[in-house]
Length: 533
Ligand code: G4P
Image 1: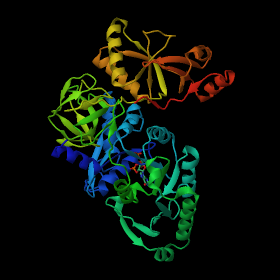
Image 2: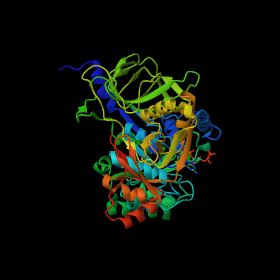
Image 3: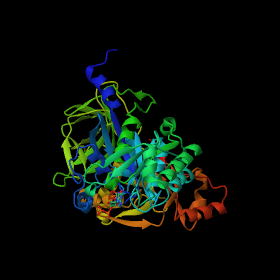
Image 4: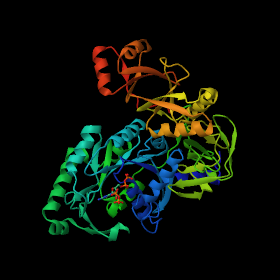
């Protein structure tokens, strides 16, 4: 079969794309790193264009605050820029107070992730949660240890933590010269040279780098250089020698050290993304067949955002292109409903910036405007053959609340609204035998999801909701429904049922769970990281 010119372009364009997300805990420096990456790639002429110049976080957090005040979910989209002929798609993972299921879903749309660690803090709770999802999906992870310009922990200790806590073998590609707080550059492990950084005013332009050979480095840095060389050798000798295959099978992570705020180490990270990070690969459909990159257009929706423009009550669906060429104006088919969808308005959205998209290729993210018919997990395609990708997994919730209509005369609208929100994935809906159908349990990864649900029930469905938080934070899947009574009888636990029929055991905390398990050693509980999809 002959391939059209456009189809050849799609596979070629996919090959020059890298789509990734930064996973980190709030304050590790994700916004700063995003800005530094874009700055380095020179899409932005000076620091601040993305996140506001004075107090870097200003603009973005104001934007979020605005959305929050309106009770709508936080923007999660992609920043696209070109670097040395490679198109980089950096997908935003909302990760602050708004940490929610959307944050996880973004990881279904990337080919790799950069795990950003604060040198003084190492692995932190949100990083661990996001890393679990990467591991579950087999996403290769690069590690960037940030804030090396400040006093922090020892480089060896941070590497040990990766291995010991999450079983991820660190493979340092650079090693810091000068302890945290006295950072002068890095040893380039590949060739043994010293990359010396020079500070530029306020870190406002790409950092100056100077390369010295080992002898020169030893003369300039003395004991600090010797120590860096010894530590890097120790890492290599203890299983940390670089092996790309181990990065691709996600059993090891290349590690870089730097300081995003000073743009130190940022070039290295970009180069690594270009050289090492995987390009988009054919996505597997529901029948287990890969959709070739050069097949006709296909994409899946990983996030739906309502009400970005309250005047129009619009809905934007963010989709990742999986195959073919997307051209604005195309009429595509929604594989779930079999209905056509006209892509007249298509945007790229990042922070407060928006631009119209005319063409997109595998790995790119498109924001489809007026997309009220689209749901998270939907597949879109054009031409033949028809395709459907697996739906997105549901993630282990950590917050639970009983929902009741505040106005009983609005019970019908309430039910309709609740079903709608659940189908969009705004919250997960659980059924509780204790409370009956009239009082469903909302479950969420982050509490902000409740706010969004409450706001939308009130404003879109004219049915204000009363949410009573439940004291549970730990959840497991109950393997044997016959064991329900054991959990329901516990004073700090109960069983609820998910829409797919799975029984979930909720516990006040891990301790309450362990106590019950000690009382009933036969109780079969399974972890629940990301299921389905
Ligand atoms: P986040 O998006 O992950 O939450 O983090 P963000 O980039 O907003 O950074 C959090 C704080 O850490 C900011 O300081 C930022 O300047 C600082 N930071 C980021 N990277 C580095 C680094 O490499 N070295 C040092 N020393 N600091 C870094 P802030 O005080 O909250 O804001 P600001 O007033 O300094 O901008």
